[in-house]
Image (tube, rainbow, N blue to C red; front, side, top):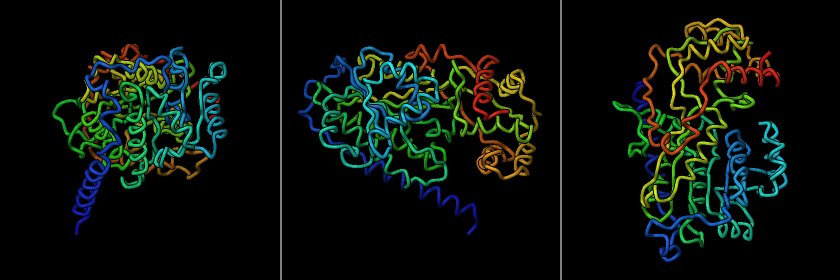
Length: 421
């Protein structure tokens, strides 16, 4: 059998698994009488005080979401569910993350409103003690699910625990004793629709075709969970929304940017091989702090604008495109020395560079870069619509672009940590 046929069979099998997982998890622990007063679509979770459940608080975006939540005096408590050995470890990891993002001084003033809990979302009661689980069910008015395994090498089946974790959180929302369930918002990814075939732009909507997801288990798992949010919205009174997040970059204040991300490691090539790829594309990069601000805008959209039975989708990307050539120019203005060469020559130089994860970390992503930039013709990427997202989020409309000022902050932050010379 030819490799092409084998690839087609593997893809078909993968899509079958995707459909099976949607079917497997498309039922929720909901009883009609629990929210008899919330089924008319007018009830609001304007319960005071507001109580939020946040996952992924130890990551970059999660840290900024937590910072935004704690700046809102109406938020009384944030339960941060973390992968950790115990609650003390969970608390330490959040503190360390806030310190890395230069958010610690503000956090220390308000951290009494945070309950850091070691959790396993895929297990019964989220891996919590019964009393704590019941406390969260009773108090929560909003759940922001921002935790996911970022591993592009795993197949779809490996992500089932994460899909199950999302369903478990939806069931927490549905068990609420409030007039209607707690609101549930899922941090998805533009990879869930990256294989969109056009001819139009990618809509702010959930699609019925799983093949629109990029052919990675990670992307397919995000598509599945988007679909489950839609199913939950149709079957129950829950207000479930999808936050489809694009490429985030260093924050607008301090320029702090994860040094293990692909774009960061491309820029690291200025140190190691002195070459960056000359790409014929534009970028819709969103500073991570503005991504968090936009998310808070979106989860606070008045319930009257979100009719029951509908699952809103927001494409959380920068609405303004910046040419890659402009980014290269800004990097040079920030003092980086490099040649901009065709992508094939950049990949060739990276391939020939030393295998050294400490001094040449970009080299470990060679296969990823070859798959993305090594083909003769790059895959057409359709733009994502942001009409509704911009309408609902002032922060998205006002987000700074990747200009000399912002790029200069990234370079300064990387030099401060030693990531760049």
